[in-house]
Image 1 (cartoon, rainbow, N blue to C red):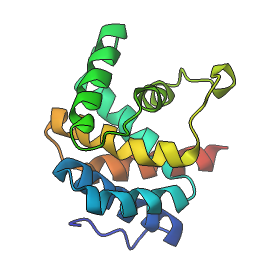
Image 2: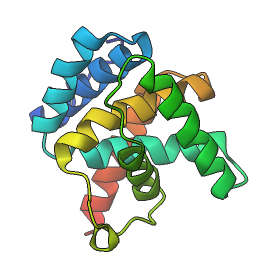
Image 3: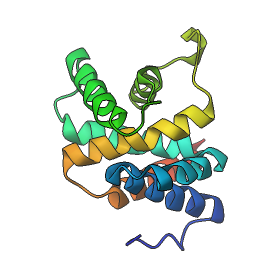
Amino acid sequence: MTTTWRHLPASAREIAEAATEAVDAARDRDAGAYGPAADRLTAADRAGLVLGGVVRLLLEETHPDGLDGDDVRQVLERCVRSAAQWRPDVDPHVLLVLLAGALGVYDPGDDDAPPDPAAIARHAPLLVADLLAAAGRPLEGYLSAAFAEVARTELHD
């Protein structure tokens, strides 16, 4: 990891380290490293919130004029096709929930089968890695921005 996370509280450092490991493993299609990193994310409280922020920031950057249904479908299809080559258990519904949640349009009360935190943790790095590849950027800046956004939100709540 090139970025130091020492300034973050221990729980946030755990999210940053696990997310970096999982996204790197997803990018490299390294199933052996991916499983343990996704397990670390599952155990890290609020990892979904941080990774959701990363997804939202990446979507905003890669679609500066906004997203429409076709854009969401293209992102979803690209990610599923890419991930399915090495993760046959990829679930398009979970990825769609991640996309909708990052965009603020997902209501788990309206979902007959909302994904559990473990499913979110197993799928979020796949989506982040895919969006990072499309953006041609590294994770660190987005992760730092997502942590800053969470901190701002907590400060104002």
